[in-house]
Image (cartoon, rainbow, N blue to C red; front, side):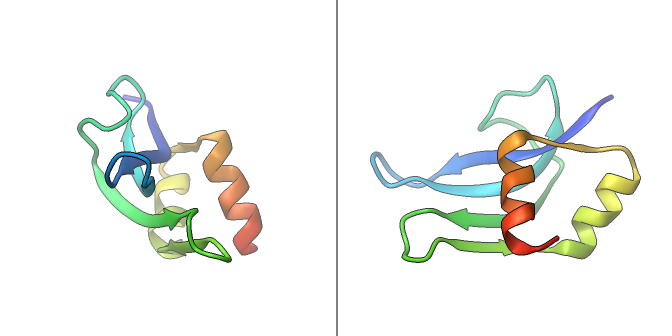
Length: 79
């Protein structure tokens, strides 16, 4: 099973808020996930990025690959 660290959209219509989740690569975007490792709210100024860096490090050590958007978020937080 290959795992990804990616964004899952929550929130209402035209009000996107994202969870940063660890999920199987084959599961749908908003479907089943393994663990929530953070959240991202692009609507605040500046954007709210709240990540659990210890959990993310553990998952990357286990072989989870971050998506491109999560890589950008990690880079912005100085991970």
